[in-house]
Image 1 (cartoon, rainbow, N blue to C red):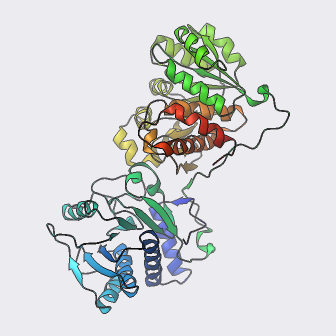
Image 2 (image 1 turned 90 degrees about the vertical axis):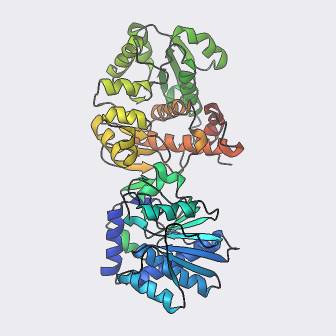
Length: 493
């Protein structure tokens, strides 16, 4: 498969359009030639994924994405496939108009889509309706076509972007194609890797269309996909004191499981020592289930302070609650100025009493918690996850992990990475508690906040994928502990 050396670099739509212009105006590659190369890349992807396909239906919109589709139909016919074209309108302009004429010159017919029409039989449908050009909900007639394609039972190859998906944000404001494969051209669009995009992109591919490296030299990516990494091997003379001491704080009445998961994840991610400060009622169960955790019953700030003095990193929030006991521990922990990871009710308390952190800090909100921190709504957060994550990082002076499909890691200076791993089975209780413990353990072992968040998110998601090999439904948080340990040691079998 042709791949691009820039496949881990993510760009905004505006940046991709600038790259297109540079290819045409500076490098001298005609727009029609780029369209032809995109069509070749699309046909190659189609033949690779569906080698038995004989009938394809290409759905063409009025712009350049539709032009890619017309030329794909030409090439498919030349390759011996039966190709049909359904178009949204009667005319196309510019290079797309030339591509439409090329299809007609090859003897192809263009059928105008009308609401209520039956779709032709197809082994594969090709989505070339809108590409990056649509940020609003498709109009009703196009929505009807999209829903018909989705309901056809045949797989869909999307060209550049599944139509109806916002390529900048991953937001889906209306009907959108659910592709089996999406082949993008020149540069990876950031919105294809987070939020609702997970349900629409299918397998993402990128083809650089044979353009020279000089094209990308002056365009700094907006974000990056995380790479699979782990900590280096430990020194042969390592001792527990050299690997940090995590203090996990939480576990209000009835929520002892959350703080246990957090503490155990910190152990499995390599912290040398892990203490737990929790309600006294949980101590017996913690000692019986995981004696390696140093569990302490604390009834208030005075009992917490000596534990804070011995800790190097705090994991604050799992099962913490928001009552008087919870708030007192939260405030005492924050005032210690220890490096920390803040999650769950620790974030809900932060929404009530905002602060900007001077110490290394990682916040790990899900969209609901992010909305409370920003004073907005979940819908607003999900409409632009990139903006929400960056706003939180800047506001609080912390690295922020905005959890969800395609979790984002944002730094106060604007850096942002996107997690390409994870699965729907991880949408179950306790997963966030694990992540808090993992990131805290990495901080304790010497990572800075950005490194700990990026590495921790990656290890957590990859462990989830490893655990899901036995099925996504029924996956529980503790299933990740064994693969988490293996991946942290570079064992990826």
